[in-house]
Length: 206
Length: 413
Image (cartoon, rainbow over all chains, first blue to last red; front, side, top):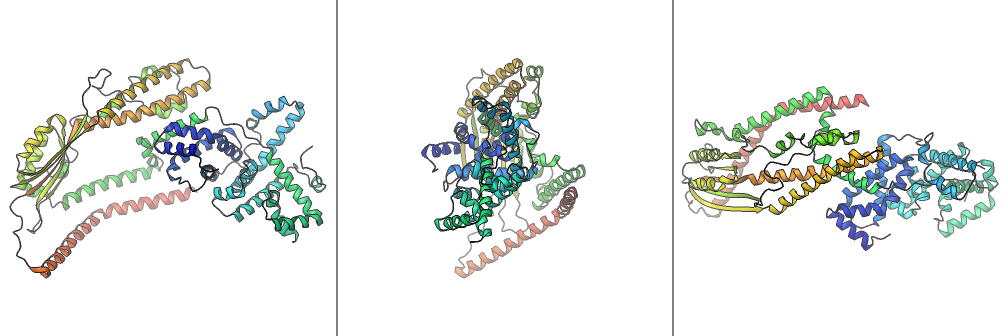
């Protein structure tokens, strides 16, 4: 995760006003940044806007990057701040995806078509994804971010602490509370069933 | 460990983020507590569910969109409309108030400037304008920026025929300025040099010289951008002098310098010429390129069929136009700088230099320096007080406006 030589060189070129170099940086990070924005907002349009805003802010903040942390951590930090700002500004529709089919229906279906599940399974799978996303959408912004960063982006606790700019202890308790809230939401939607849980099964809808 | 403590640790436990001893304690408790085991399973189930979520890949033209957005943002920040957006966000009455306050502020500032300068008009006698009225006198060459904006219809013809969806609208207002006259494709190569000079003179009679400087400048169709006059006031101690910043057309630069030099004894004269030809012609080439690209895009736009295609071309078009705009602005600036040379003139009156004071010894000099400072401080404090008194009405109005704005904002919440 260190600032490898190629990244450093790119950053230096950006600082000299080289748009091309910035394009390459965007290329390197767009998948991660876009995915994060998508999980936070729950739809493509907002995700695109947010990721764009994040990159613009990254471009402007670039002179402030001193290389004290890994570049990717720094990028995430900026992105997280953009997300928080946006969420607070717009008081995001709490459940962005419900009744909005456009979010999930492009990529996953194609993947699944090849592994040939029946159409019923397919429909159910999508229904499940939508429910999960809606549950995530009910979490408070910081909790949503914590879950997304840890469970979907796979950041370590240390990295999360650096991204949030807080202590390890805070990360642990924040994530713990976030997962708790998420679990309650799943239970409420019956995505997890208490009785299934107590016998040790995976709590998916059959 | 009791159940409550264990439940707080379950989340890091799932991630394997506990140290060995605490992890062991949790495991031990789980072995004996079915309720906590169920809790752990629920947590694992929840995490597994979340992990099912997938994110789509960013749209294929995402990098391009970011670049375009950057360009747009840069453009917005440099355009004038962006600078005044806060103003149009105000309610009608606050706009009026703000405008009134601005006018008042300018008026008061001008008035107090004249007052503070000790009424040079009076000292100079009839026929001589006071410095503040000279500021910003008519510029002989039209400002290139306006010339550019006056003729946007030229290349508007082709564009008007094409459909114009909403995204392009912000740019339509600031359509690319026409190339300034004389900078056509086949313009002969000439050196573009920004000339400036710095001239210091010692003159016999200050007021006379002051008037002559203004006359010389006007005769050369230039203007006085800035002028200062120190008439010394009542005290004989203050040095008497004046300074100007003159802008004159480049072709009369030499002549003006010569004329000015005859006003008195030249103490200092330095000239500089900054050659910007390379940047200038480079800019011209890039602007031409941009225009070609723009034309090509317009052509494409005419042929575009799907909305998506139109949008993409429009986006690229907006970016290209933004670039042209920025370059044209720079080019116009250079044109203006080249067309008008600047001359910095300072005048100093001869004769009343203090006679070398007798050597008063260190104490005497210290005493003198001390009093000199005290007197000067008094002088400046006096000026500041007068200025504040002049500004008071404006301050009051601004305070009222601010108060009203805050109330308005609060009432909206």
